[in-house]
Image (cartoon, rainbow over all chains, first blue to last red; front, side, top):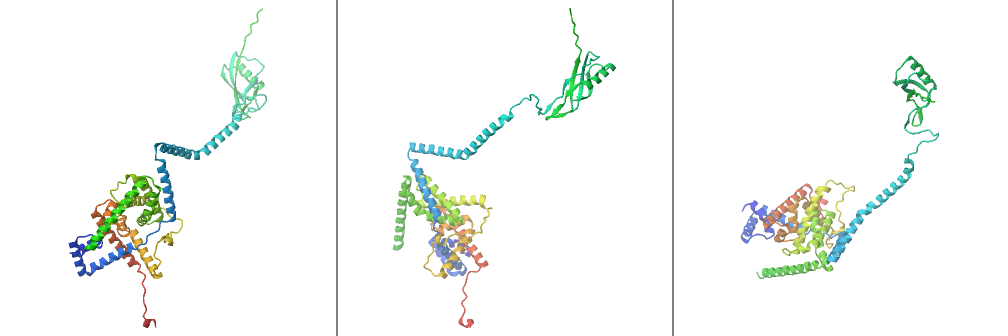
Length: 226
Length: 224
């Protein structure tokens, strides 16, 4: 037998896990080969070292945890003994699961709902539309300029549509004719219009600003009979 | 020859006794007898913890594994058919659980770094059931030797380590190991052989790098 073969079978030799013939041959080799005998000694010492490793005591904490496990499993076994008991346990478990699921949500949900109600009740009166009435300054986004009083003089044309440019003081500064003919007489009429008309300026967030007013003039013919 | 026959018959009687004890225990567990749970714990918590500790080399991981093992035993006792002994069945669950723990460790905790300094030995002195009758020197020497063996054991391949631990520490037979590991007898022999060789090499490597404590006796002449 070669040394390698013997060394591969030394583990079995040590545990007495080989046939009588093979064991005899290994023993013969060991009696002749000092290296293989030393190898066997080392393995024997190693095995002794492993066997002598002290048993480690189970930690107290683990013992307690195991006792808890036992009591829990016993309770579980008791609850599963009959069908009504099992159904009752399942119902309890479902209820517990729902409770556990809802409990973390309950406080934020209630808080959120109450906060929303509070905010809504506080904000609702301020969100309402209040029409600007009386002499109050309109604070809406934009209000257009309006014509308060037109010129008292007559126009030479039967019909004209004029766009007036009104400054922040309510004074018409310029005009452009939208519809109608521009004759020299009409030019003079428009100059009078600008001079004598009174307007309310446009406002931007309550502050007067320049704007435009579209003014339409039409001559009206009255026929008096009788 | 007569002695060996006597040994054989006594061992068979012990086996039969253990088998009948197992059957009674399993029946009591299936019936939900409270004392059966206590008996099972009293019989197996120590060997299962030691096996898990040797395989995982970490007391907290071993504790987790032991709890899982007993939970599985309690829940699956109805599926135990008695084809193997109760001991090998529980050890098989322990081996599988240790394997799962190790896999979980490599997936999740490998990159974790503790804030506190790692302790050299986090086992309390009272946790180790050492023989206090020996001399202080023997105690220290044994302690050092044990630590060296344990460290070497922790370094070898887990597959071979399981076989060596079951054979040389838990003291199971080859047949029982084959039953626990669910492998053939040939595989068990091979794993034990390779595990022991790996362990021997680890120990030799360690002894070469760090010579063992040695007393150098001085002669009276040299001392003078």
